[in-house]
Image 1 (tube, rainbow, N blue to C red):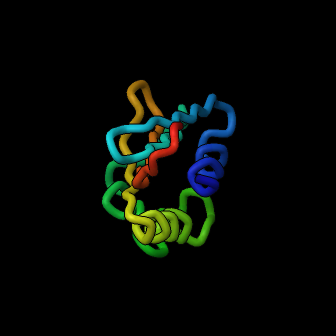
Image 2: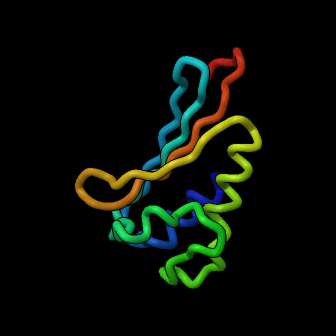
Length: 101
């Protein structure tokens, strides 16, 4: 979650960021949406790859890769889609327990 929030702030510093947490059938889903420039379509296939920063923010390109590895190690999944109206939505889902969200 920290990586998704930090990326949203870094890549859309003057825009609103929204966070949504929802419980679905057997999963809990967190979405982080920003109103930044979005991800160039040619970079989308490499977003969660190792050392794939796209030179956009000067990072190492490990943040989303490590986020994906951690989420998957806990039985979840992570993804991205463009935000309607511009920007990005990054999300992850984890298996839920019986606890209420």
